[in-house]
Image (cartoon, rainbow, N blue to C red; front, side):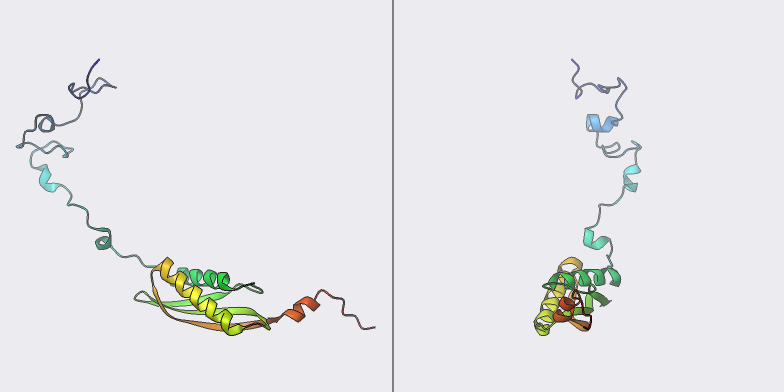
Length: 160
């Protein structure tokens, strides 16, 4: 059997390998082993080593994407979501996101506790998903849904 390391022909095709002579012999005056052209002097045109990922460029997350994260987080924070899903708007400036969330909540319930839970969840999710600081989350309660009205909606309310 042929040993592919000692034979300069390819074991599969029988054709000579494309390894430059300098790579096989270790001649330091010729082209380096990684030089695909095999021409002397072409190593000077080799690409420079890659820069670290942080030095290659910037990533910008659109305000709409951050708003989508905030809206979903607000929906997750509500104990029993009712009505329309929360709507969030966001203003981003230098990795600082200012968030405004519009909600529909059930009444009677602890509105302050629900708003605090939404603020906490939105802050946490935006910071971990978008890596942005969230100094404030403003909440607008757009509608209150009465539990009695919702329960009574299924009953027949005809006058007798």
